[in-house]
Image 1 (cartoon, rainbow, N blue to C red):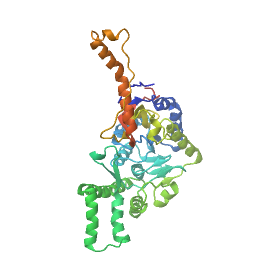
Image 2 (cartoon, rainbow, N blue to C red; image 1 turned 135 degrees about the vertical axis):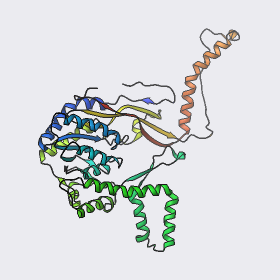
Image 3 (tube, rainbow, N blue to C red; image 1 turned 90 degrees about the vertical axis):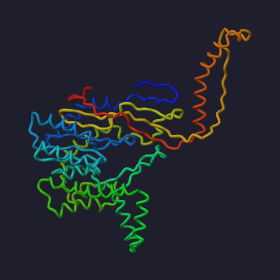
Image 4 (cartoon, rainbow, N blue to C red; image 1 turned 180 degrees about the vertical axis):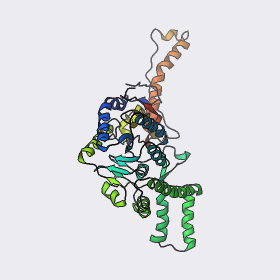
Length: 414
């Protein structure tokens, strides 16, 4: 149990997150499942699991590359890693990371596979493009690779999350203006582009264009690594399908659709599929993937801030090693405090014991000091309560702080 403080203005701390204890206790089960998948697929397995807990999602990040490398070194130190499989769960991440992961993995194997237990969206789908085979179960899902840009709302709206703009949305807007709205006059088209430039700004539009081109270049480079080689028309069809022909970024691509697109999908047998799903389930509880998305569920009525310590949000695991990513999660209500709040206070104070009214002159200094000390907690509590009562909730939010990778050892010890 972590410490709880009643100091006004400081966040309360919730119970210690059970995720770390759970991931340690279940390490032997997961290690055995990884071994069984290795035996049945003929490949060594590394798990990279980016949890998508609603209040604290994680993504593919370059900070994980160094730790994946440690697993690769450990696996290659005493066995042949001719075939290597990356068991990946992620909703996406930085678009510069997939190329670095795939090229690093290929330094340690002849054949690279990817295992998709469930979600492998966006940047995770890019990783899949660089693999020779993609093992997908019935629940496996890939996604479009059209990236998004995060636009800061500015200092006037710090409580609000960054605005997300899909790169393909800009291209779709221009297509809409020309094709749907029927604008063909050059001056009218120029006005439409001017509105876009005023809304987003020239630097943002420049970033969108660079990202638009970069994602296609990376996808092509990743597909060119596959064995056997993918012919050019098929490669172009895959890239077009994943960037333009699927119009919703959140669309989940199942294994049948992925195969139709041209991806190198392999359907595992029932035994392997069960092992893959069981391994996914072994991460679901420690990473709290099914917990509430409502920030209010973590806040008490009389406390606008709380802190969950040592939350577990991501894992890198093999039979040799275990790394986990821990952080603290802050939950907070943002209130709209009125400029001139009316504070009504009611205090019941009495003279300290042993002080008679007739003696007040001689003991005035001591008595006043004691009265103030006696009144201070009640005053602070009443002021805080009055401010909360008069300040409507504008928004709620959560953020992760003090994130760090921790190695727990081969057997999961701290």
